Image (cartoon, rainbow, N blue to C red; front, side):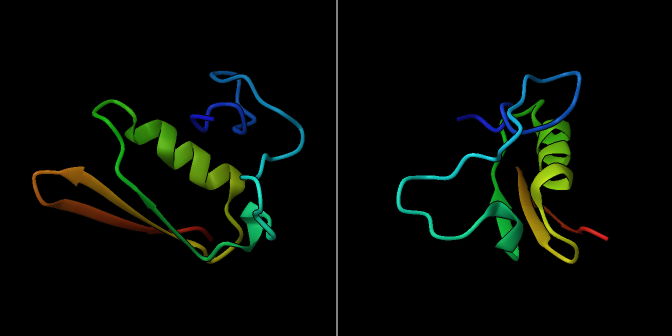
Length: 75
């Protein structure tokens, strides 16, 4: 789905209910660790997406290329 459809932000379209993959028994707010490998220029969108859907204390591990790995915790 690209992520942009679940970020409640004026820069993206969004839905009121976060989507789930077929067969996914848990909600996005129940996931503790997210790993992303965004294309150049998508880093900010990934951070907005994480802030929008992750629960408190969830962790985002982002690989930005050239051995640059950043870890974020939602507070």
